[in-house]
Image (cartoon, helix red, strand yellow):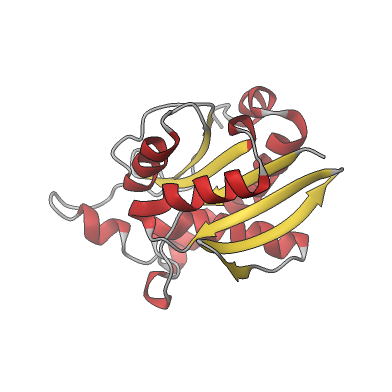
Length: 189
């Protein structure tokens, strides 16, 4: 049976709920809810398991905090013997407008500490990532406050339908692969 690891990046703890930096967690929460599965507190993170048409899918919300996300990714890839091609990391992205979704087969970490640590631990930047735009409407020097700030109601109206689309992208990635899914979903709307 083919296995996949879908990782949503974020920080654990109530104070980080609904923050822009936890958008990866929010995508996985939406996927778990739609799939009627729950996360269990396991080693290095919160893990939920499901299957999609005979493929085993592990959802991982690392409990290592953002800057050490690579430790959780490596552990679960090794534990479940998941290949690099079957890894998808979901991450917030300042460079994209709020709710914009971009799937990439590889790329730089673009200054994102979570992606940077995963790249360092895996020794490659050739892994798939789904970037979710969080916008960048902050004043100079206020990036950390923006990223760790909570979404307001208006922003959530924009983001919520995109969380559903992100769930579709996960399913397509598992069933059809990254190239097909990029072609299907990365079109400019």
